[in-house]
Amino acid sequence: MITDSSSTPSCVYVALDVAKLKHDVFVKLPDGKTKTFKVSNSASYFDKFCQYLTSLKHPCRVALEPTADYHRLIAWRLIQHGCEVRLASSIACARTRKAIFNSRDKNA
Image 1 (cartoon, rainbow, N blue to C red):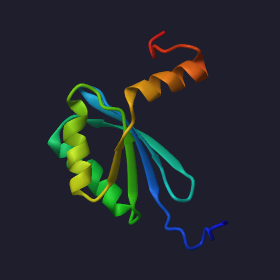
Image 2: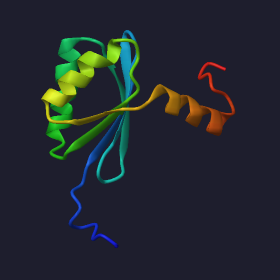
Image 3: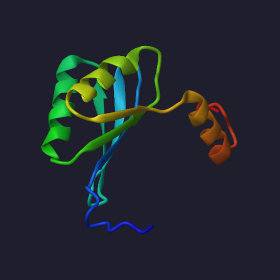
Image 4: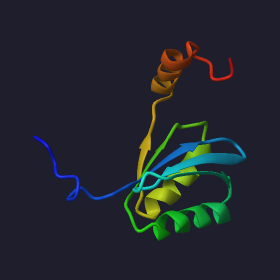
């Protein structure tokens, strides 16, 4: 069945690369434009990031790969601000890297 795209709610897609000190952020807006920036691993920067996502006035879907315990705080904060958060399996990420770049290690 073909769905009418005009009735489908527009959505903001966010991809987070979680790290110890700073998280890399990729945002795809409903109009197709993209933005990239970094968010420091601190509560004040998490609040600014959530305020930015809230200001976009669209539902947000966030994907991130669990990294040690560094993903927990930002994921919790995003959920509290109404974002839909999905964890990407590290095995799935490694298999995708291998398929695209012929290497399981992102540093190789």
